[in-house]
Image (cartoon, rainbow, N blue to C red; front, side):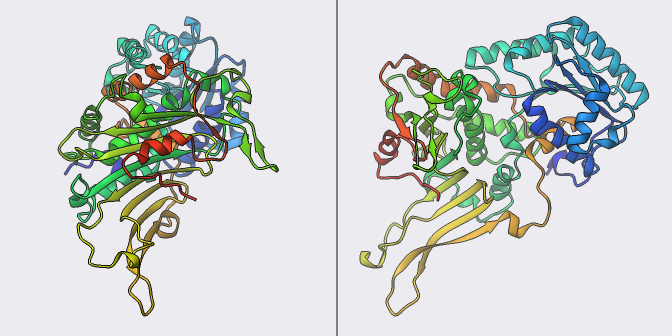
Length: 496
């Protein structure tokens, strides 16, 4: 079986230049530069490597290099490996200067015409940057055996139509194999472990279907509010910010059919098939399958948290959802009839991302009911963050003279089992993009399928003028969410 380049033990980037647009921004400072520094420390970058920052903020090469080396220990790139281009994203001179600099680095650093352009900017800058790169000829490899690749951060559009418009702009300059749409969740080892659990173990595959699984819950919970991102969040909301990308990507990995190989196209083909099988809600059905909410002031007297409408940059009459819960149905042979409950929210009691499969109860129990009072249904819980690991919940006899059965669990912990250091998500994904491995990136048809699923719900909520349900900060969400899952005798799994 072809397992693809991503599982090679000898994974080092080729000679190349990484160009980061938005080099003076928050994401670059917090995530991208530390990821590059970690790759350098672990010997994943060759000496023929250069890093170029591009932003509007005026800065010299030396100032850019000094700030990066001081904060992140990238001293190995001294001597011309750290460069900076200042200019507007809609100014052709910016790209002419960049093209000249890249030619210079190819000659001086031996980067061989291999260029990776990372768009770490607000979405409104994507189009002028792509057009600017194309106008300067940087959308094509500068040498016969070189490459030119584009990494695009989310959000990739705000709905299906805008995503298609962005795709038209992208594909007018870059071919699809050159494009790497990034979702940092896919770079997490624990998300990738969903694939290992399913396809490297024979014991799980036979029970991974409707015959054994009663229901599935996917939770992405955050304890923080919107902080200083209020103005951005007003245009996004929980559905666009989390469900359309992170939640649906995790769901696709957990539910898809086994791929023919772990090559990029084989794996992404199966994800698309799964997303295509998700039943679309009609406008009339949305109230029965989707719940939204917005956090209000809450917490304790000692630590009182503001409500969403009190946050900086938020409309005092905002109707933006900070919580979303859905029931999804997958219309295929494996999952027909199994409900999939997904939820995400801000200002919830715990920070947790997990997938919980609850199994069918035994068809007949010969044990009297009064001896099973503390027995829950069997479940397999995949903990993606924090306390990364896997729990298997089952029934076991309680020690003693009487025969009582109570829920117990077996736990696997990443930290306790493996001594190897887990790379940060961005570290893994930047290296993959430099290698040209698209396995953990999102293909254009995946983007369309995800928007196809959430668009009807977003549109329904936009047209619904009734008051948005609320929930207190540090609670598990609006009561409507409990009613959503409780209609068929189920309840949310609320981790401590």
